Length: 167
Image (cartoon, rainbow, N blue to C red):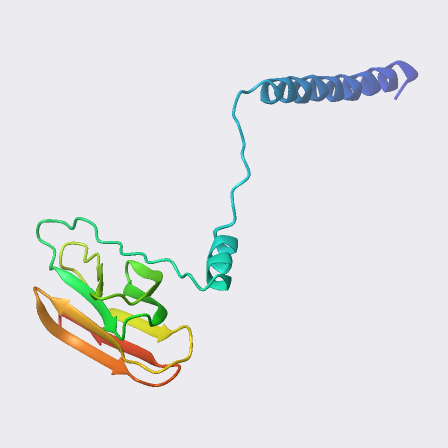
């Protein structure tokens, strides 16, 4: 290769680098001028921990609409008023939902999303979050009828219920 060919090859490499630099600078300018506000996402774990430290667990009762052909499945948590609890419930295909609360004068009820009747096993696991006497009871109801239930009076009691409508 001669000197002229080497100079031309070097210029070609520099030209490619120059084009790449222009493209990157243009993208940077476009992205820098966008009016999208990015706000930091608050950490929900911090909020939960703060509430637990204040001994004020949140009472969450997600009950939504279900498809017309879905079975009405409800999870009922009851027991001694003032008992703090937490747990998870749901079906394997739909995932388990976490909840926490304090038992009041009426039972807490949680609707279970059944996806049009193709359930699989519905399960729930609940436990007392503070030691103390008193009953913690969990019932799984379908169309108003108790299909599975469990209870515990232990100081740190936990209850697990499962029901397979296909069985």
